[in-house]
Length: 292
Ligand SMILES: NC(=O)c1ccc[n+]([C@@H]2O[C@H](COP(=O)([O-])OP(=O)(O)OC[C@H]3O[C@@H](n4cnc5c(N)ncnc54)[C@H](O)[C@@H]3O)[C@@H](O)[C@H]2O)c1
Image (cartoon, rainbow, N blue to C red; front, side, top):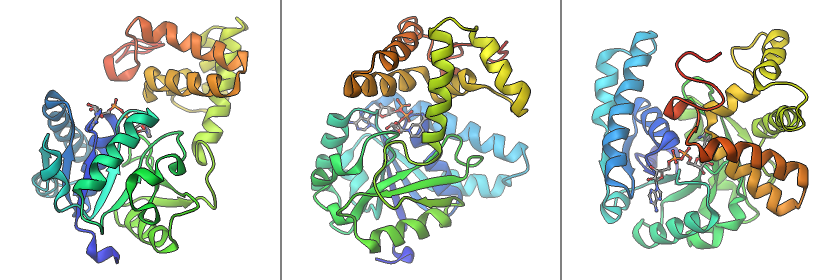
């Protein structure tokens, strides 16, 4: 398969990431099918994709004509069979749960043509964990995006040992074709490249808060003041979603048995239990849209 053979992209999961990847692919000329299991997720997704397009227009990054053409290329559906029928490339963005992801890949392996390339946008899971369930391990790798895809324009391509070189080459060409800079990993490595560096920063920030060394706000102020960035580590975690940040910390705490990582996870859980999930629902470590 060549890059010219990829025309329709199937996005599985219409949440935070699925919506962004859909618009990015449509802007770059791909026909997109956005599939979700939850009927109300699709209405919310359509509204947010439209809002993202309006933002890009107001920033001078997109014309109204091109935005309308991109929006017209996106179709949404709750019908998995219909979604899969014409897919050349599948990008999976369902929640970070290995059993769920395996179920989704097994389901779409039965529904998609054998030519379809499968990718996961998982933040932390190794593609080798899911490869057998895709039924096409040679045509499967991680293709991992960052929020907001039109700003953070690098995407990790991470093969597992059974991924063919042809698939890596194709994914590199696809990534470039949607305006992203491919970062090709030479081997499987938890948390890819940027996220590895980010996790170290967030872990250090959480340790300072858990051990009551300084307040969340002062830890962020220290980073922002020196690095001259708009946000510090806790602001970044609000942006990512505290539910996802907690899931990842908790998974690593359980895997490693490290009490310090568990303490980080428990600190995050305290916010998640209150329903404070970050920017996405207006309250996390900070109040939005006016964070301290
Ligand atoms: N949020 C981020 O900053 C970010 C960045 C990069 C990668 N990721 C990864 O992307 C994936 C998705 O994260 P998100 O933040 O978009 O999650 P999300 O919770 O915002 O969205 C997940 C969507 O998947 C849908 N879903 C659940 N089960 C499904 C199924 N069986 N079939 C189809 N759809 C189903 C849900 O209804 C929901 O709409 C995760 O693996 C995460 O680790 C997240």
